[in-house]
Length: 161
Image (cartoon, rainbow, N blue to C red):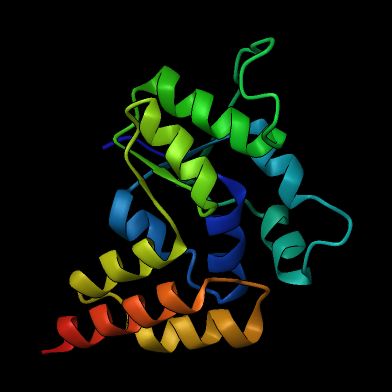
């Protein structure tokens, strides 16, 4: 399984100290260099800066060939993550933003976001998604519409039956 990640799922999982779910679910995760640069932002949380000092072995940084005029409206990390997923013929792209997921799907790339990672971890018995969801909401800047939150919590209840 080839998995590529954008910065937001990494950011949130690192902040709630559950980035270790990624290698347990996917073994290895690939990111474009632009994602690492976004995580290095001067206003990034301390947890991110600390994590970047010791990037884990399961994360592999890849260069992406520049493409002129394609997806220019996206930020560099999102754009390069989509390009890298295409180049590698990734099985899955981890990306949160709805419009970016739609763009990836238009390019035949399967996607899930941070909440999807929590659900996948729950299905394998690796985490309690409701507890981690509460941490996302209270400890990070994670945003989701009320409908998405409600749907996620309903799905969590179904999983726990």
